[in-house]
Image (cartoon, rainbow, N blue to C red; front, side, top):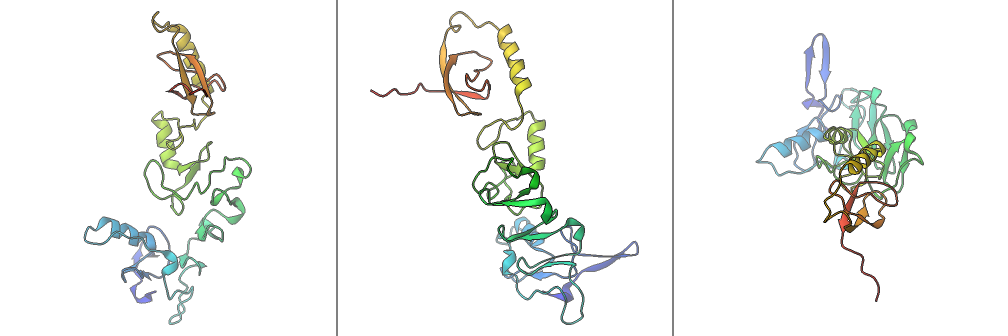
Length: 256
C-alpha cells in the first residue's frame, strides 16, 4: 500500500478520492507487475487496454502490506475493510459483507443473501428454495458479453433453468425477442401466450397435401421429452408440455 500515491482533488468544495469503482483513501501496489493502481479493477482495465502490457488480472488476496488505518499518519483508508480480500471502501451504503463460502466480499447486505452450496455463489433470499440449482452456475462467463460472472460488479440474473447472465444482458436479449437460454435453450419466461398464438396460426395455415401427413421426431428443449408429431412449417408442438421450443431429431433407434 502506498499512502503517498493517494490521489486527491478539490471539487465543488468536497474532497474527492478513490476511483470510479471504490471510494478509498489509499492505492495498492499490484504484486503481479509492481505497478500502483487505485483498485484491482483499475489494474485489470489498464492491462487489457494497453497493448504493450501483458494481459493479466490482479488476484486480490495476493496484495500485501494492507491495513485499515495508516501506521504513519493515522488516516482511515476505508470505513469498510476486509483483511481477507484486501478490500477498502468508504461507501458503506453498498452494505458490503464477506462471504466465507464464496471467498470474496459481496454487496447488498448479508441478511438479504444466502449462499447456495450447489450453485457455489450468494443468491438473493427470494431465490431460497425457489430456483433450479446448477453446479457452479456463477463460476463461468456471461453467455452474452463473456465477462466472468462470479466476481463481476454488475447485477446478475438467475434464469428459470438455473443458468446465469448479467441482468443488463438478459434484458437486452429479451428486448431482441430472444426467449431461450443461450446455454441450454430452455425458455426463460412464461411463453403460454406465445404458444397459444402459434396454435392459432397453425390452425389457420393449411399445409400442402404432400406434407399434410408427414411426421417427424422432435426433442423439446423445455421438458427434454421426445415425441413424434405432424410436421408443420410454423413449428412442432411438444406432446408432453405443449411447448413449441422444439427441434427435429433423427428417429430413435429401436433395440433389435
